[in-house]
Image 1: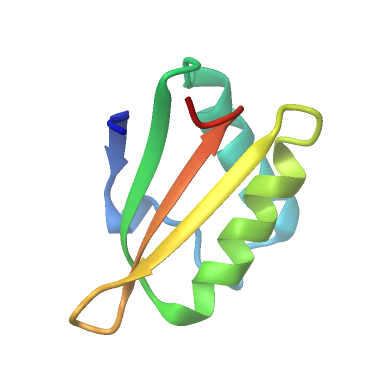
Image 2: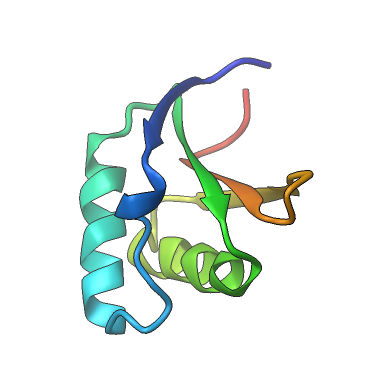
Length: 88
C-alpha cells in the first residue's frame, strides 16, 4: 500500500521542550494540508521525541481518526509516519 508523502526536515520537528500548545498548532497545521490519500513521514526523530510527537498528533487531530506508526532506523533514530483516516 503506497501513500503520497510530504517529507519534512529534521529541523522542522518540534523539540521535546517546545511548549505543548505550539507543538499541537504545528501538527494541526500540517494535518489541515493532508488529503485522504496522504501521510506525513518524519525522518530522523530521536527516541525521546517519538512518543511526544505521536501523542501530540493524536491530540491535535481529535475527531479526524489520527494514526501513527514508528520504525527504528539503523542509526538509532526513528522514522515516524502520521496520517488521518483509515488505511485503504
